[in-house]
Amino acid sequence: MGWGEAAVLGLIQGLTEFLPVSSSAHLRIIGPMLPSGGDPGAAFTAITQIGTEAAVLLYFRQDIARIFTAWLASLGQRGQALSADARMGWLVMLGTLPIAILGLLFKSAIEGSLRNLYITATMLIAFAIVLALADRGGRKTLTLERLSWRDGVLFGFAQAMALIPGVSRSGGTITMGLILGYTREAAARYSFLLAVPAVLLSGFYQLYKTWGVAGPVGAGQTWLATGIAFFVGYAVIVGFLKLVSTRSYMPFVYYRVALGLVVFALLGAGILSPV
Image (cartoon, rainbow, N blue to C red; front, side):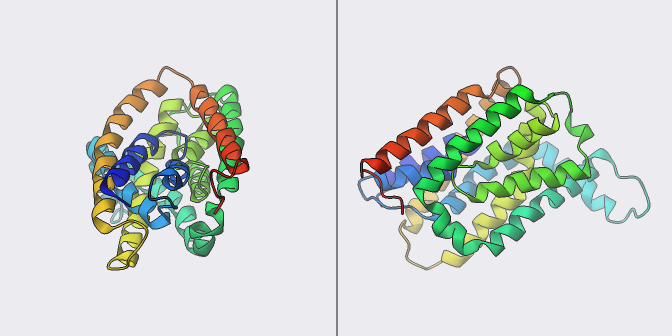
């Protein structure tokens, strides 16, 4: 894969990681359509996500530092009530367990059969419908201060669904938040915080596993894509949080359905290969 193609994939990663449209699906779909062709692979996807999560760390740096400090302090405060920040720290850790456990259990399928484009297109459309129902039917009254231990686990399982390209990490967690009655902004903010440990662990694991191993994308091109994803991702976070405070998620629903139908059409025409 050339440098220009890597830059394109980095741009796509940055644009789509935080939107409920599935960045992994976009990389999986667009990768084979580039001149070099071929699936860039699960490792490339995971490593470039380090760039977008670095953008989260920068944007939420004050929140994350406060939460982490409070969580550390809570380790020595047995029997005392947790502060709101310490509780959030424990909730993020609890919500990370499902994706960590399921990611290890189904590692082979995630890197192989689940990247079939028929599955990707189906997930794009199916979860678009779920997001639409949640956005229209959710109460949208709860803030993050009301986040319970049960809801933290449910958010975590929703995030784990993103192991399948086409579901969307942010889309899954935001949808769960709306179903549970949280506001759009609260669901989006918790989605960003919850993704930090899962994405960084996955990305650095893939980086360690593939270090020095030849893959479909060279190391230099991968780092270029990761850097571009960081800068673009930061801009998307700023715009997305402003958007969801006043607008519905329906434009993303329409986009997901349209993209899924396009993928089915390209598969049917033989332009794209499912594997």
